[in-house]
Length: 165
Image 1 (tube, rainbow, N blue to C red):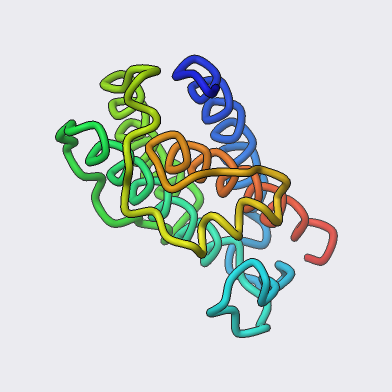
Image 2 (image 1 turned 120 degrees about the horizontal axis):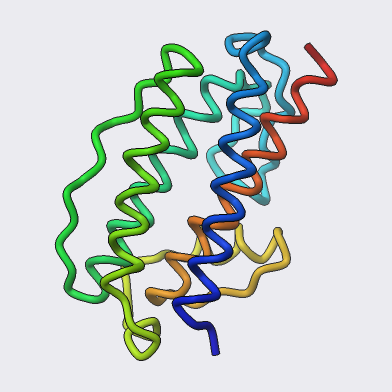
C-alpha cells in the first residue's frame, strides 16, 4: 500500500528533476527540439515537436491540476496555483514553485487511509502512468502518483532537448 511518505519522496524527486531540466533549458527555451508525445501516451498528441517552454507550461499546469484532484478526494481546500507563466525560464521556475506548493499542501492534508478515496482521475492518466511503468488507480494516491510520474517524464523530455538544440 502506498503511503503519504512514499508519495512525498516521489514528488520531491520528480520536482527536483523538473526544476533542473527547466533551468538547463535556457539556451533552447523556445526551440522546437523536444520529441513529440506518442499517441499511446497522449491521445491528443499532434506529432509535432515541442519547445521546452510548451512542455513546462503543460507539466506545471498539470501538477496543479493533479494536486487539486487529490485535495478534492480528501476534502481539502487548496489555494489554486495561478496559470503558469513560462515566458522565461525564471518565470517558469516561479510558476513551478506555486504548483508544487499546492501539491505539498495536499500531501500535508492527506493521510495514508485517505489515499484510497476516489477522485475524478480518468482512464487517460491511468494508461499514461502504465506507459511509464507505474500502475495507478483512480484514487487520491493515483492523482499524487500522476503528479510524480508526469513531472519526471517531462523533465526527461525537456532535458533531452539539449541534445537536439
